[in-house]
Image (cartoon, rainbow, N blue to C red):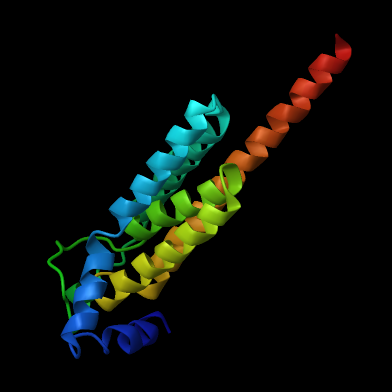
Length: 179
């Protein structure tokens, strides 16, 4: 099913130059404006001396990349262009494709911003993450499962940090009650 969905999406590539150009931009460069929005939101939070949400978001991003690296080391799934004929629209080296690093980063930022900084901006960044993930499939460098794995890893990382924060808050409240 993963390959069939890939064929459906990537099969549309190479037909309309304008659409391909947009997808190439999204697959390659859109992640940088996502990081820029993150930096602005983090800067605004720090300006208001609210360092905890920024630290939590950073911890979620680090946790997501750590989980992604573990999965990449145990995965043997190569990129679509290494084993199938594809419409490869951007240059990319061979290697393990599961999970998508671009999708992991974009979704970790989006879900983290939603959870720790701003629901509105988190939803907007989730839309951008979806576009990035779709574009990575369109240009022929990832399967849909690679993007989905990146999103799931990002969600698990944010939930992990939320759980740790809540556990710490409960322990802190108990210590305060004893005093």
